[in-house]
Image (cartoon, rainbow, N blue to C red):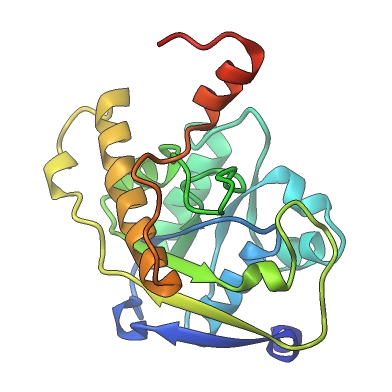
Amino acid sequence: MPPMNLIAKFEIRDREKFPTQGAFVFAPNHYSEIDPVVMGMVAWKLGRLPRFMAKGSLFTIPVIGYLLTKSGQIPVQRGGSMRGSEPVRAAERLVENGQMLVVYPEGTLTRDPDMWPMRGKTGAVRVALEQNIPVVPAAHWGTQGVMPRYSKKISLFPRKHITVKIGDPVDLDRFRGRSLDSATLAEATTAVMDAITALLEDIREEKAPTKRWNPAEHDQKETGRFEA
């Protein structure tokens, strides 16, 4: 992805924590439509060919959609989930081939006003627990300079600086072997989101809100359907 080198300079911290072989779920934060291209570039720089479970709408964006399609990424349509047959089969194929799978636990761009990670969905941990592979968290900051949140316009100049921090695999051992019910998946997802948030706090050198943004809760408040 040479064009990205012209648009941004990457500072990758703790790169030794990034697995150089074997299957794993790579779980970054998400606040720009160009995140898949940025994190794909990071994986490529670290010697791995990334495969993404990305929302289907990204594949309709000029340039981004082309790059995602040509690189063999996997669209998950709106209203779908990691429990759908095609995402599951795709994940199984990747694990069999010892490949990495990038899954954004938030499922979409964070809606937190200050772009902190919001409440996660269970797709990343579901794949990891069903396939018995690790989840490696990551955080990045600076991508908003290339493409602001909710924008579809890329800023080419001046060259941007993107900082990425790789984390240790999230300890999911206490969840393995348990029934993957909603409570188990929610608890495991919280552990992953805590790890991602801590990495972003380190990059930004500030603390995230004590309560993570919950889109469903805020939607209910806005429409008058919130129940305490």
